[in-house]
Image 1 (cartoon, rainbow, N blue to C red):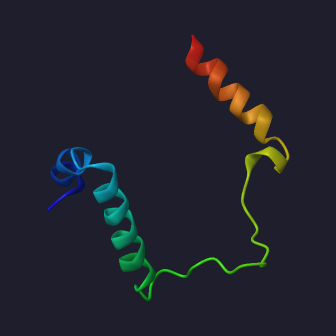
Image 2: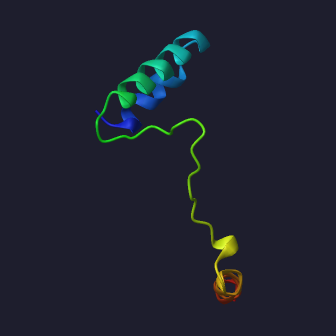
Length: 68
């Protein structure tokens, strides 16, 4: 079953059942070995083009090229 098949039914659920579904899925994901949860108090490095040299200029160039 795919998400596009399940989603319409999930959207029809009452709010309490939606919360139960969220909790169920979160626990299911947490129990998978391939998913490593975030640890409290640990610092994680995030990639962001904001701090990459030349990224803003490259993005601007792409936007300008697609505007024409």
